[in-house]
Image (cartoon, rainbow, N blue to C red):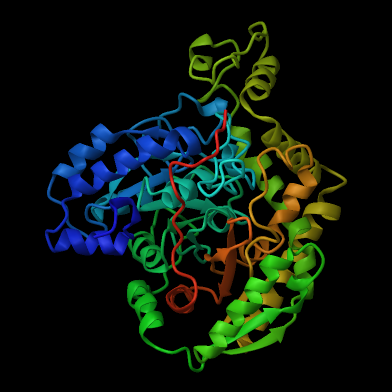
Amino acid sequence: MPELHELTAVEARAAIARAELAPAELLAGARARHDLVEPHIRAYRRVDFERAAAAAGRPRAGALAGLCLAIKDNIADVDGPTTCGSKILANYRSPYEAAVVSRVKAAGAVITGKTNLDEFAMGSSTENSAWGPSRNPFSLAHVTGGSSGGSASAVAAGSAQLALGSDTGGSIRQPAACCGVVGLKPTYGRVSRYGLVAFASSLDQIGPLARSVADAALLFGAIAGHDPRDATSARVELADYSAAAARGVRERLDGVRIGLPREYFGAGLDASVGDRVTEAAQHLERLGATVREVSLPMSRHAVAAYYVIATAEASSNLARFDGVRYGHRAGSAGAAAAWPPGSAPTGAPPSSLAELFAGSRGEGFGPEVKRRIILGTFVLSAGYYDAYYGQAQRVRAKIRAELEAVLQTVDLVLGPTMPTTAFRIGEKTADPLSMYLGDIYTTGANLAGIPALSLPGGTDRAGLPIGLQLMGRHFDEATILRVAAALEAHAYPPLTPVFPRAEVVA
């Protein structure tokens, strides 16, 4: 048997079912791996191996029985703080747990802890967390992608078999690409958002991160489905997603039609990434699929429309953090005690309600969150609403219509997840626009509400993972998983970083 941290979730589950491996042994292996890698990658915000050990010691049943699972720290649980990577929620404890948390517990998963993220999921590198960045297991000097970087890093390094993330404009798929794992953004409405701290409510979606396509299908099957507590949750029949992934391994792809958007191969795309997408298309043709060029001219407007709509919704959603009902309150030393060392506020206590609001939000929010709130408030303001927010919604409708039209002529769209591999930590923090342009291939799926998956397509010359993206029709995650599993089985097996690493990072 491989080392425990090298097992996929499907392999570990099979070993547990055969009584060759006990959940407590699997957890002990994850804990040992965590102790080795976590000081370097900083994937977690909070771990609770004692609670996890108690869970692993009880009889487990269900699709995820005994598997170690990490949860992004913007998904509510009741076992500790849910911080969203923000000082403003450093002490916040949710009175209820998210629907997905209830579902993975019911499926038998052992929850190891909460993972690091860009503050309120606003970022593409996990550098915006109030507690510092997570690091890429393939190169500690490079970013994990964001905003679900902690979840991707934990899975890639082997301190959890599975993880949950959230995706508003690429926040599952980008870290999956950077860290060499599989990440699925489901169709909007396929997975309940109940208990997900809102960033942009019309775009947010929870999904799985995993080492293999079969693992992602396994976790997705456990969390998908209608939830009456989420008004946007869809009543659409579920497929057998694990069977779909297995079919991709067993059978050829005869009759499957793949589209390659010509607009995805323009300026800004790194040659090594573009070459790997072309290579993947050739592999698919050898497996029986038909590949042809398609056109998505509206895709060039996706980033602009996304950053208007997402920031507008963020401005509205984050208005609730005002220092009155919950979260940090200006002048409250107890709340600030949970902040990172040296970051406690030094201002005088507020003397009015306006000062309380301004002080609480000014102290509690980080620079990127403030930037997006200001931008969102501006595009919603009188005199600018129609010129910016209204226009962005019209562009969104055109992007959705264009993708739906193309997906009537092909079954899936293949392209890069990101224009480059992971960049170095600190490389883009002073240039927000450059950071935002990294979302060029991922935001369209969120604007259209369609499912999309990133899987590893090997590595570049520096050994950094390359991400391949597959987008499909609404609620047709099964076809995406089938084709992704075929690519994985025949061309791009799961990646495993080596530890301990030679790099020394302060």
